[in-house]
Image (cartoon, rainbow, N blue to C red; front, side):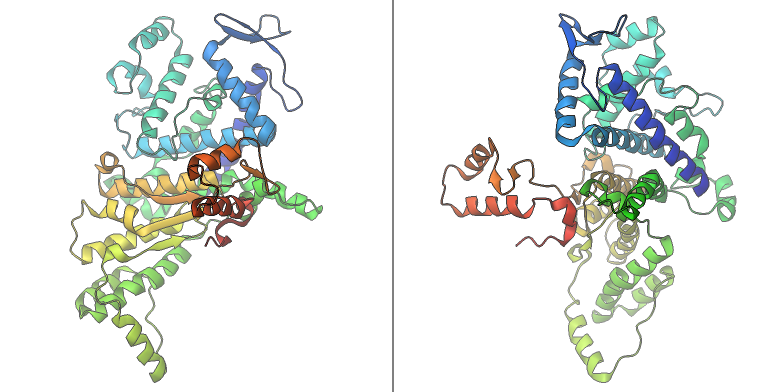
Length: 473
């Protein structure tokens, strides 16, 4: 894996996305310092005072209004940053899926299967793929040779289709995220072109062909780990900015805590941790149930597993009592929680270890991936974008084991911690929140439900500052 190329791309992509999205906001009359007035008419709107200014469609007015409300709530720079990382996440997810041939349509969205072509295959195959397209729109854009708008239309439709499979990564694009999608997506130097051209396909692949396997010793790791590296490098400049401010006694705001605290754990450390915790737990179960032969087979696969040091007799006796309780444990009983999940690196390897555990217990290969996602793996984070990527990484790991996993739509147990600040401010009910309590509590002002509801509102106030150290009773 060429980490230098990955870092260079990720850092450059963040800068360019922020620049391009800021320009898109300017086009609709929104800047960091002011919001320009617009004039509306039957077909749409345009920004006042701009001669020969672009005319925007009617539905884009609602998108603009929602964008303005979000900027008033979070601030211009924060919203632009969020839109930038949303599109970054989508682009790298699409790239991973197309390289590994995981897209439901089987058609590449960012590139072509033919290396000499720069135009993505989806443009040529627009009328042959199942993306709930409007043929009239496709024909009109094709007839006018408007490849740019056709590609934007197809890209949004592809993201919306994937949103039905993995909503945490590809939530439906219906508001200002689409409005701020940069122009010239396929031009030389665009984020998409750079993504395709600067990071070689080897780095994305979970499974290698025979020729690529010969290069594995030279090129090193590949596959789902690239998602974590991309994320770490994407926020690296932001992290530097935050610590530069800290040296000037500038407080780290909760919006910047993820950038300040994010660290991608090296693979050998992950393997050591997982094999000597999760792996050890299962081996102790096997010993307790008299399956010593299976123990040897699993230990041979776990290169970082260490046999436990000899204990004092009284300690060993207590450990035996504890391990005796594992005798009837099944793989489905095991829970693995990462309270600061990041991009999912630890849980991805836990998936591998659990897969071997399930096989050793006689489960069928087809059912194991869904069981692991639904029964075993749990994750929390304060960073919404990290949780998106962790969910994606685990689903891709499951897809590598079961090609039908998208049909099953497994319910994963990953969550980004959210705040109650939008409902409560300074301990006081905000306008309208009393109605919310009334709705959930059925008007019973003395009910225990109301007390629980108010408690949750209180405990999750500023929750993104505390994350998983919150103690919810």
